[in-house]
Image (cartoon, rainbow, N blue to C red; front, top):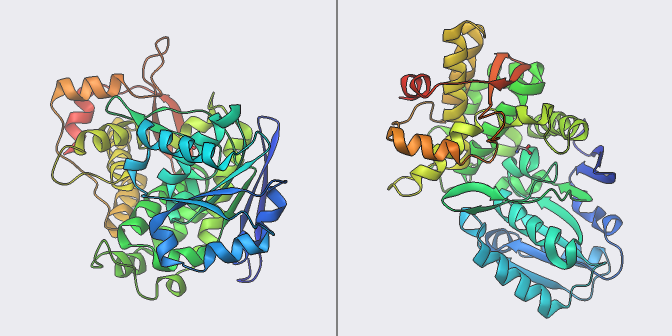
Length: 376
Ligand code: GLY
């Protein structure tokens, strides 16, 4: 893909079209996804602060004189009933009708929560996602999952409500803090492992350059020169293509889509448990640990080549992502695993276990002692 070209991926989710556009001017396409009346925007306040002119330009671009925008604080704190209620209150003030559109601008948590608002406001309004983080571009924005956290569990509340348009512009990434790059890399590596061995090989062979970018950088600071340093647009496009292919095939996660939960079953448990500690894990960090553990287990069982496990762990470490963690007490582990959203009373908890790069077993079984053994 040339720098000035857009990548377009078309999906049909629940019988409705959902288009992913990746390109420098992707957001100027917004008008195509919005019918009358003009949309309302739910935007990450930090993104608004870092890109002061952006919203105005986009609003002008689609002839929007209503200019209704709610700025919210991003992060996991956005994914609560209380925040959703605030959004409902604001949508009421805006008098958003059934044929209206909510445009969400931000990272995964803002998109998850605003997507939930779009799915439920007046029983569902049109939704457009403008992902501004690497993680949201390669994963959260694609495939129509919306979510809130509740009951001390990550994402147990949510509905499927695909965005009609997902408009990804790498320009946002220039100001992304280093920790967010690591989070996004974890999901990009996951997607490559599941569905694109060539992307995995590219990432693996670029690991020294990845390390140079993310290892010593202050987690809260942007990475100088990051955009030109590596072929991000190509990689984002490759990862998005895998995700789009999978969700198009299995929107409601009855089969192949489960593979996208690689590293997430344990990851969600650790992420939820660590929130009460002095160093909460970010989503990408938790998923990284979850992936490392299932690769170790599969390699020990002999169901996955040891070399694949070694490469995955080397790549995660090269991206300054953790690959081990102190084990929660057994009762906590059991309780949190029992609360995992993918738990089925009939089937019990199924794990995604790697067989090799590019092939996953989506119905794996794990015993708690194996997790304990390979977690720390
Ligand atoms: N993030 C996993 C999925 O969309 O299924």
